[in-house]
Amino acid sequence: MWNPLPDTFAISGALVYDGLGNPPAPMDLVVTDGRIASLRPDGELNLTGVYRISGTGLSLAPGFIDAHSHSDTEILRAPQADSKISQGVTTEVTGQCGFSPGIAMRKNERENLKGEEVGWDDLASYAVALKRREPAVNIASLCGHNTLRQMVMKSEDRPPTPAELRRMQEILQLSLRQGAAGLSSGLWYIPGKYADTSEMAELAKMLQGTGKPYVTHMRTEGDNLLESTREAIRIAASGAGRLQISHIKTGSPKAWGLIDALLDLIGEGARNGVQITADRYPYLYSGTGLRMILGPPYDRVANLHQVLRESAEEREKLVALLETPGWPLVPFDRTIISNSGLPENAGFLGLTLVEIGKRLGISPARACVKFLTEEAYVYTAFGRMNAANLERFLALDWVACGSDAAAYPFDFSQGRAHPRAFGSFPRFFQAVKKSCGPAAAIRRMTSLAAAIYNLPKRGVLREGYHADLVLFNEDTFVDRADFVNPHTICEGVHSVFVNGKLAFTGDDPEKRGRHGDFLRV
Image (cartoon, rainbow, N blue to C red):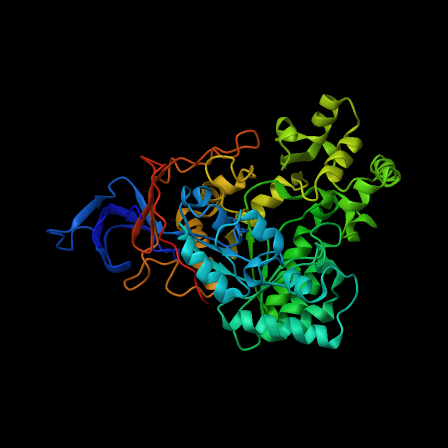
């Protein structure tokens, strides 16, 4: 494995950010056997005979922690994690939005891995499979409620029986013992939306005494945002009293004016004893499946793709509904098709449904139904967010950086990403630096996420801590990816180190080391 450095080396003369929000200072840092051995003001250490990397003119920070990642199986398909390591990410927290394939491998995941000799049936055996693939970054994982429901109840739209609920609790407890960082939910998605608050509260009780958070993609981030937030706080109070709100947002025009009430509600929850934090990506376009453009009754139809494929009548019915005032949930001119598994759709990627409809000579509604019929999952970007509210969320000191993206290779062999996969951290840094200063930005990209997920000895530059490091130029650290060229790497990263070994260098991005580990929490 590529690592052209000795076991002991020094980074000298860099402007060092400790990750805790303290003002930076020129320091010398020595790494030995994967740990930070010494950290002293520049010039105080005797570095005679020690291999040195010059940090003059650069900044040194703890490796960035992606507080919201979807690399669960993708890190096995693309273990080099190009999109993450190239922007300084050294740790990802997966199992988000209720989906945690790391606790049980399914048939489609085995097929996606193209027959490679990997397999698992719980988090412990997933960790073994992950280590065998030698990932470039560290991986921590949550246990997802949607996956629990699928394991026990498949995609049935009903409450669990007492026996089924007990079985979900047992799997959750096992996952927590095996190192899961908490419980996640995705109550906007099937089958999570079939669960009521009491089901989630009973599962959250398994977190009591663990100090681990309840992490949620709430039931809605749009018109009923406040009700969903109240529900999330109630569920978290049933557990360890810790709530992590996934990609916090006001996700519809009607919700834009709710931000003050939302922040007041979160403050009230905190005063009542629930520790509340959140993550956010610095983009106005979200990314998820195209079917999420649909409201009731289609939002609860688990086999929608099959229904549309088999019935021309259903297709026409959906087209008519999408052309009705008030539909769809996201305007067609702000709905971008980001990725498709069909080669014949390659020319449409990065275009809105309006643009695609014009190319095909059909209405945007028919273009939408075409994609929904052709594939069960079409990765899509939705533009429903407000720029002023994004600025306010990014200025909050309890909001960490989370890309909401999987790890992708530089090429398109594993599909096309949302630009946030390659650009979240530089964009987050520059936005927060502008409003709060660089030390605050670094804290929220490092130690805040480590604290949220109880990641031991990471996220801070301190003697004895793991040497996850990023050496970068903070002035030129900017994102370059967009929807047309989403796999464009950012600028300004000099070197990235994972567990004390060189993993990436901006001078030669094609050389990458894979020195990550599974982090049992």
